[in-house]
Length: 365
Image (cartoon, rainbow, N blue to C red; front, side, top):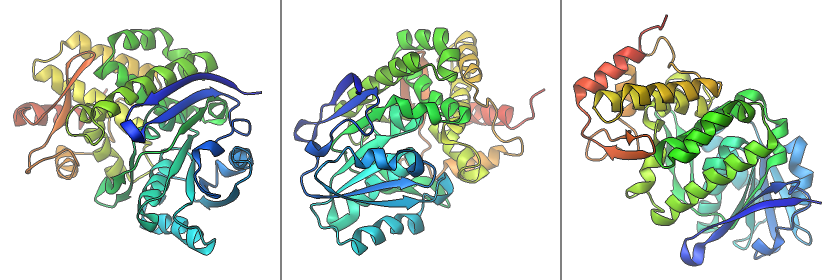
């Protein structure tokens, strides 16, 4: 029997949907009520599929369930792999009444959502995220898309799911590196919006990294509550929602430079948050003591605190120039006005930005 621990609404009027968080949900929780038609296409990958595909099928009694298994990894988040989803939908003759189901991490979720937004000009989809990072971030909010060789997530659409079902039991099969990568996005919420949550994380980070189920359930709930609140206020990232990208401009540059998948998204974001905190301190927004707190918690989560040693300031600037937040050629960055208070700005001085890039482009002793 499953144990539903939390249910949160994402309040978007007639497009509102629930986030269900619990133990043993896969295979036990009936999701057929979120499906309007009779057809379902579950999209997963060759790592998650053998573990959870049959259980996911059991969540849709009475429905005709097909599946497509994609290759695993960020390097496959591209047009060619996206077409495998369309191929399966067309070969199985799925109509515009079909529902797609994303079973996997952030890559599967983003690609399934984009396929749903595009297939026959838009069909519903459901998120069943199986990694910590996707559970606390990418499965909520409707951002979908694929990567381009010149930039991460540059091609996509906003397309909200019908429901998000988070089974915390899936984290017990997650490699420690993936758990740490997910913690980067958890830490982010404390840094940008919730100092009480940040303090809790500082007390609890080692149990979280060790995959303590009770601590993880609380972290997921508090992270999703923060994300749901932000998305309800700013669905299409016209202002407030952009603060959720703390560390992402630096982080996406690292991911693109290193080659998609060589650095996990959360690893790059962890380093990116430290770089953003460094620049925030140089801009006189936060203290050096605050900066040190950011470095310590990222390090304690098992995340890297330095970008690739061979990456130059010029590499960063060239890659950050294509960031989605930029407007009219101006580089827009998410900085910390204080711990728990983020802002989006294009006013950081070029001297301070370059100083940050130079410090982080030098091998540290």
